[in-house]
Length: 419
Image 1: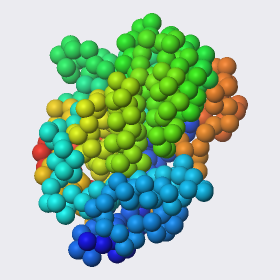
Image 2: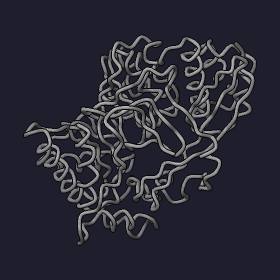
Image 3: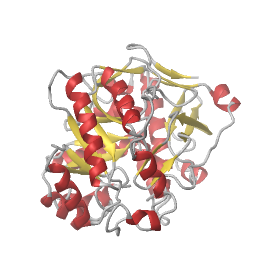
């Protein structure tokens, strides 16, 4: 079997509400989702989700190769960008191709990827993550009510701009999940998305911990700040989670050597091979690993095969437009199907027929505010960041009836499809 070519598509994830974090908000909730399709002479096509940066350059490393040699081809792609380096979005291109190769390999074997990788169970524990910083109280409760109806008893909220507001929102979700679980204490996490300085993080979290039991705090300071993460880790009771934006094992080593993180994360767009290697590195330090991403299907399969998987992020309950996934959410977990490969089908006609934005929002969460990490208080953000008031305005309680749940409910069993 040989690789014969590739194609690219960009579809969208429609949230039907504003989504974002402390860095910015996408007001219309429409998020582009780039896809890579790798073709073979055996008629098997693999699908990967991730950027298209320098795609032709990276693809040259695997063109004409046997796609089943996945890990060797992964290292070949890394070597192919040796001079420029593989950090940033380019690492996502490598990850997208890598995921597509794993998809091909498992399809060729006639097995779902989770079984090919050695997984014993198809069930992957999940936590809810609604990218919900712009929601008022009623909207927030409506979103997490839907998650609770699917059995989720752990939730991660976006925050970091206002400690009182964070405490209020976390308490609302805590009450909802406690009631849904018949009184059992839920797991609560807060994601600051690198918005704090070191002592800001400690002050903010310690204030929250006077009233709440936080399971972890995610990315409290900059992703590469090993010393700063260690300062936060020692100063709070909650675990510190980080790693979703690290690209390559070399970026993890300083953090692990400093004892700076308790939960090791990796993003879905960086690919399956990267996740497996990060999981092994974390396991060597007796640390758990947790995948992050909107459509983390590749890492869900991989998570079944590692000994230190803790829990995986569940964002949207419906897949991006034109995609059908052989998985469903039940009893607080992803349940993977038996379709060969990733179990991911692409309706290219549906995607091509829909006109949509293909680039990230110019002022959304991908843009770091000018004053991030150097605010004295939440109010200071108003003068410094043009798009920060939107967070604060939409985060504040607003009068009116409770919003309808923004997630479309899919059947309890069977594949997740969006057409």
